[in-house]
Length: 412
Image (cartoon, rainbow, N blue to C red; front, side, top):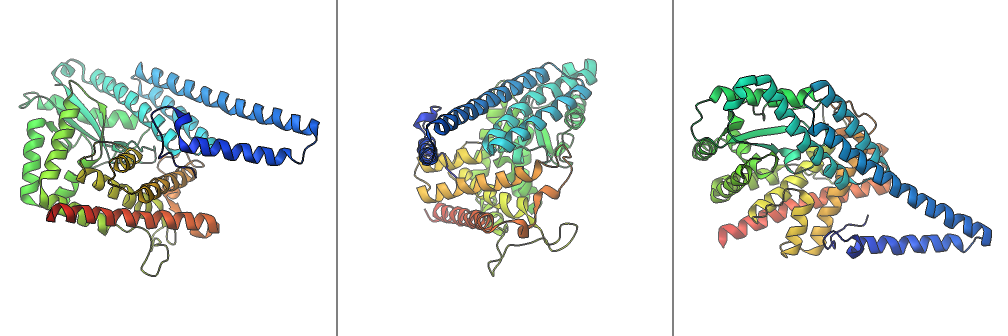
């Protein structure tokens, strides 16, 4: 797989991977032409040109349909129509992925749609609230978890929180009802919303002042579960933002996490404690009980250890890029990661995410189905097994890198 570490801006002709692919494609085509007569060679070239033009046309059509559905969502607030648009959007996006196998393209489209849907859900909430909606202060609706890293698939529960700009909100009931309706609106649109990390919970909504005090109290108490919830703020992306409130909150939360050494220490300890999917004897760690016994959990033992380690790396280095590939590239650009480790991290991210999306494709839109996240290792060929093993070993390397950086900070 060619990894676009050498990308320079938006000009694809400046990307090393694009150049490598073009050279390989040309070489393969010339090799086939060697055994063709003049008529067959002409036919092969015509078929090749037609296939390329067909892919380009299909790609343009997908982009246009995405833009149209995002525009349609942006002018809609009816749950039934939102559900239909959401289902159609992801059906089309998974179909596109089946052809191009590009996790970044899938997640980029998904993130754009999710932002548009957030605006529609806000209108839904305001319509349901009626006159009470006038008492909603300026707000920031922020996604955490996979959506916070801009890696959202509808098979993930959506994790949401609200920050608002009124220090002492006299209309707490309006904010509470708004949070409940935001949760309800996303569910009405067909998406799963996390039952705990949701703005209908008082813990996940509040003013900047309340979040400040909540963070101080959490750090002072030092209770593990509360600190774990606090550390979720390391991965966040804005779905709705007003007057820079979301930017203020992001800077505030990152600075708080960095300044609390006990919290950072716990974060690092937790990172290295996550299984990277390979056992002591070198075998894959498989689920030991339940309906997926004997299967490999792609999320728990693959994606989570890798992305959690890179999230911790970004936090420790003060990198504000929300996406995992962006964090890797920034680490390389600042020479905080070696070229070898950066390439292996990015390759692992692609491998694990494509494996996940490929398995989600056949069962979507049954987004409550957990089977795609559990892999039968015996069904993989030797090349696929080695690719998975290499990705998990890279996750372990990323975990060790986080420990080294934290130790340097403590002794520096």
